[in-house]
Length: 88
Image 1 (cartoon, rainbow, N blue to C red):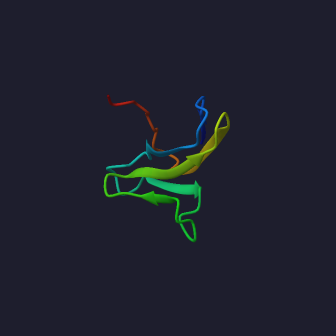
Image 2: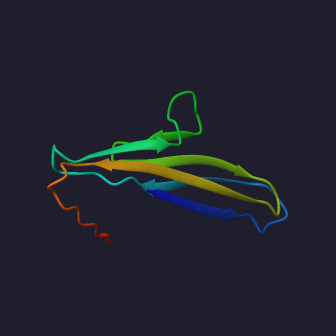
C-alpha cells in the first residue's frame, strides 16, 4: 500500500510543521503491518510514536511543496480475508 501526502506552503516565509499520520495497526497476532517507507533508521525527521502514528518533522520553504510517502505491507494467512475501515 502506498499513501502520498502533499503539503504546500503558500506563505512568503518558510514553515516548520509536524505531520502526524496513523499507520494501520492489527489487533490479531497473525496479521502484521510492516513499514517499508520511510525508513526509521538514520532518519531523525521521522519517528513512530507510542500511538502508532508516524511523525514527520518538516521544514517547507516559502511557496514550495513537499510530498511525503508512506509505504507498507500487510502480511496475513492466505485463508484470512482482510477488511479495512477508517475510524474517526
